[in-house]
Length: 207
Image 1 (cartoon, rainbow, N blue to C red):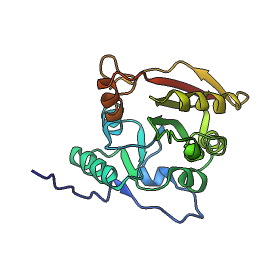
Image 2 (image 1 turned 180 degrees about the vertical axis):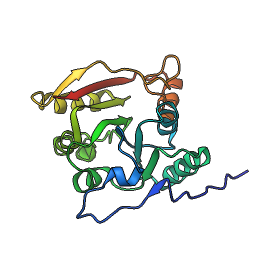
Image 3 (image 1 turned 90 degrees about the horizontal axis):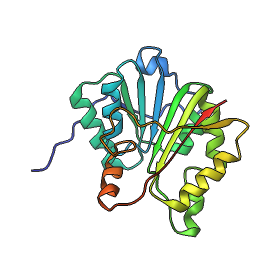
Image 4 (image 1 turned 60 degrees about the vertical axis):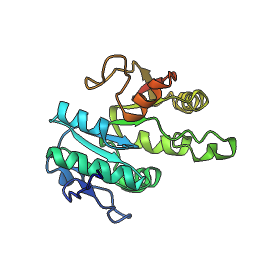
């Protein structure tokens, strides 16, 4: 039986004026620690974290329309008020819409590795995008990344190491919502675990 996906206007955000930065206090109706997940997929991580941490605000960014719609429907059915999702290009959204020093934690779990060498330039974690991630983080804010792709992980480490005057590597702590043996508890991680793929993680803090 096909699941009928509903739209929840209070959950789904529409891109605002690209010349203006988003006022997250207005969007969520309160000041609170802000978490942004880039590549939210079907919303598994967002949903579990929003339930576990009701005092925090969570924003998911997802480009794939089918995943975005599923996540909106899934979270909307729970009636959560501390989650919003937007369908947009993450790199452009960071550059154009997110204010300085406003994000407490970026979560980037299993981003597209673009494995073909000629496509490597499309990878999300690159110097230009990391510059915006750093700009958007509050002092002591964190960036947490997980991938199953060894080559991409090496690139990620090198890109972050090049900003070691602004970022300090810290322990990658599993969220409380992760199940036994999991690093973060996303759909992709659970899929890759069945294939026995190794998972690589890194976390850094803005100094």
